[in-house]
Image (cartoon, rainbow, N blue to C red; front, side, top):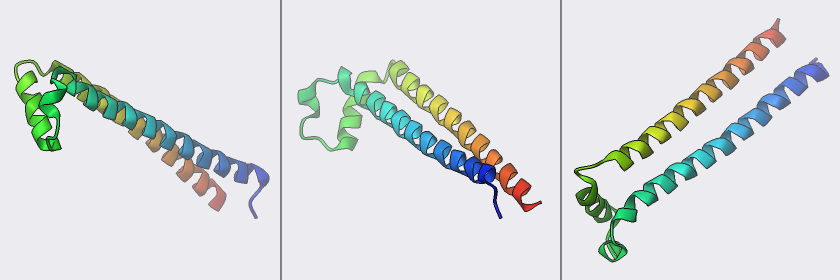
Length: 104
């Protein structure tokens, strides 16, 4: 039978999973915002009524000689994804370790 401490450990793992999901959602929203801000360089009337692919074409025409804003947005999103990957990996390792210790 599991002890209260073991149950509490699992509860904390569940809580950490929820926290990481919330952080992931916020980081994704940050990435979505960075994507939307890329279009600030395109006049709104040039985007009106266009499909997303055509809007992207309009943006690409504007930034083709200087993709620094795109590069920065992607780099930040890449960093966020790696940080989250590490956090999920750490949580997984903790869960595996606790599971192995309760089987002994």
